[in-house]
Length: 234
Image (cartoon, one colour):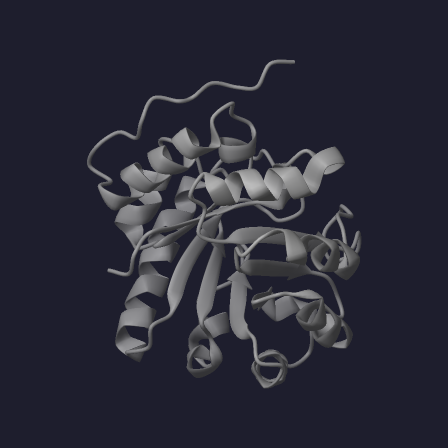
């Protein structure tokens, strides 16, 4: 099993002090920074664009894991790559030719990923695994933070883990949506190795404690994570 990685989601950070928040999760032991880009069309919300990536890039050495929830996605790949993305993840539904889009990402020198929404079948990624570095399983419907983990996605995570094993390629299997103490363990048991967490990190007083708790639970799903650090004061 690959090393467990924790990627705090910037969507849950304090937007008034983004550079400080990014520095804090880096110091707290985060492996990646996950950036959710929403366009108000592919999902019913708007977040931020490449200018935010470009502004944050000098403030951290964390790799940028950029999840593009936009359509059409192809015209924006080069701009996000130039802004500092290290890994660019796209949805099969966000363009007419998933294979071509993944080729374009790799031609830009970036790692490529495919995101599967709860209702997107695993077959959507089956024929592009040769171009994929990450498969991201959405365990909520995309577009909003703070949703409850959809446990019916656990067999789907296991199915993708089996596909990755059969491919023989070092593809990471990430999960995003409702990841917190109590859900990281089941997701890890199903085969996930990368855990994207928003409020479970940024919504606590102690980011290092939160990240360590998620990592401990994902590393050993049979045991409970560390006690929650508690929410931030109002």
